[in-house]
Length: 216
Ligand SMILES: [Zn+2]
Image 1 (cartoon, rainbow, N blue to C red):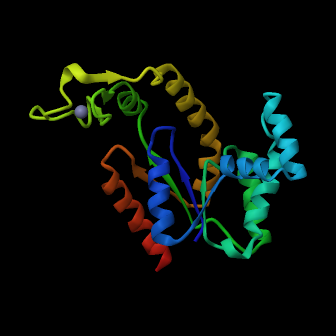
Image 2 (image 1 turned 90 degrees about the vertical axis):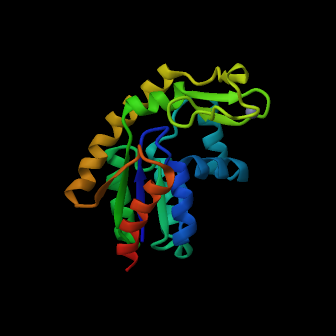
């Protein structure tokens, strides 16, 4: 089974991917990880990537696609991949389709975690940390209990790096770039929407239902 998981930044994609990887024994393919690995190995491609990244440019689709082919062509990972953060645009989706065909595979399901911008904003702006013990809470979704001994209001602090404007930008970028990709997979009847605004266990339970049907 090969899976693609989609969701805006802050949707909890990473957490859900981890659950899926463990339960179904899959390989998580993230382009960020592949790039870092290549850079660390200092292969000739890795050195090229380093100089591209250092110059502030984006790594081309060609390079990304060849890293993807390394994995897709590897028998160890055959029909055992969960794609996280790839494909990011329509050309990448078309390329992935060709690659999978070439190695006698296909995408079995595309999971889309649906979380509204409003909820993502609350997840970020509501985040507080107890300055005494380091526990984190969310004012909207997971407030500290009144009888808490340590984490009282006067100790709760907001983090400076939780920037809402950045989150909005990233959300919009995600929506714009993944829309054509989702349309591509919708035509193939592969997209399953999962409500990403409920609790983590319930989200996973929905995903697990879909995947268990495929694994049969
Ligand atoms: Zn505390």
